[in-house]
Image (cartoon, rainbow, N blue to C red):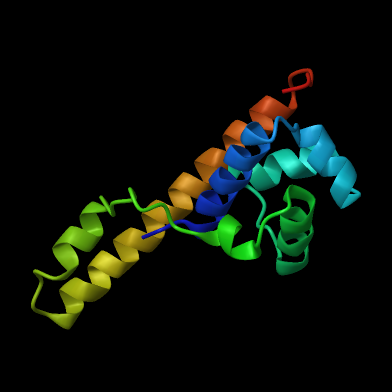
Length: 125
């Protein structure tokens, strides 16, 4: 499954780097703080449509540029590989549950990592 929030965050980070802009610059343009932008770009906070539009305007790109899926992206999710091979509805449901649980585990891992990072001193990136 494509984690669209992480894909969008990656696209934003690439554009910031390409344009030699920092998270603090983006935070100022959005009228928020660097911690909020950091959470957006590491996947612990969803980026809403209004913020996405503001970010696209700040970076001078269309919103489609921020939401595009890289052509090199390959779905390597093992659950999806098995989904087409199972025959019973019970097996499909079990795989779906496993997929949802793994997504929750990965999300909470990123939240925990972000919390740890938030406790260290901030420096310009």
